[in-house]
Length: 423
Image 1: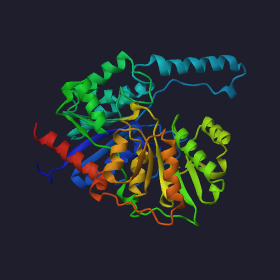
Image 2: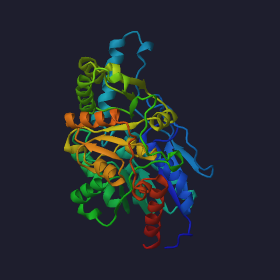
Image 3: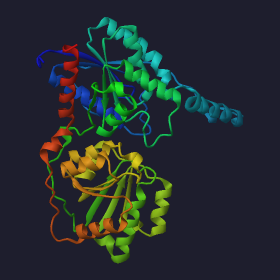
Image 4: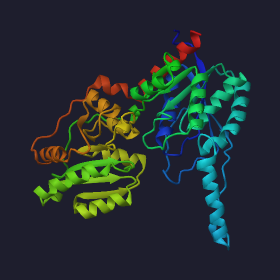
């Protein structure tokens, strides 16, 4: 393989800055580091980037990147304040929601596919691109790559699947149409990218024909945001356990009951310990904390910016990482874990066996306990909080470096160049 040969890639991603989601981080990583590997990039995105729910993300990408936009179509909703007869407006909005979530094939974002295909065809016809790389979410945009391949306007189609399409732990069982669409994408893709080893195995088990063309490129941390701090520390003798991001259903219970057990033993726990949560937390979890009587050792920051998240994590004694206690999450590694790894903070991971647990153990990033092991969690926290010694964790630097987005893009670049040169 000639590492000095330049190739051109058109990346298709519905989401982009300033939208602040995990999928955007992955695209930004591609754009930042592909150029270091003689891969020139352009990107096609949706014309609408809603930032209301997630806040704004501002990351620097090379100014040589060409950014194209395709118009987004969607089922309209009525603004109730503009209508006198709100009953009928609500009825229309309800119908729109049903159409979006129940009647549209694959997902409600499929309305962007025709617009993206038209715009991508124009870009590919005018330029000299070697590869089209389509990255999810949402699932439906992988069909853009399929159509472009069928039309013959791209020779190589790389499907960056990320999370499993039909084995997502947080999603309801997929329809037969989704399975058909997934199979179609995998048939036409020249390379398939999964983001965990388990997701790769699931794809190869469901569709044996993808063996040999499926690789694993996990999510990761931005090396320029990484810190080189390994020891847990206490600020003014208080042990700070930090959680950033959304706490999904079923994640809070394990740590909540563990803190309750610890507080029962140490009524003055608030003098030595605080658990801080930055991000979305459900009302049910707030109520659980109130009923358990642990609010005096909890602190809620609400939604914070990316920079504020870095500040909180860097000043943590330890960071908290939780997953629901069910085997269905074995193939799910939220981007939060890679963010924590980038800061080299000790991790308290309350997770079942799976890809996330394996990463933490391989990197030697912290402690892995079952989410329902309340007594064990409480005992560990007690030792960490009341120990006079600093907690030293020696990260495995070789494994840690593997999760740098720079290293991941280097690996992906090599695979894509092999695909183009060895055909």
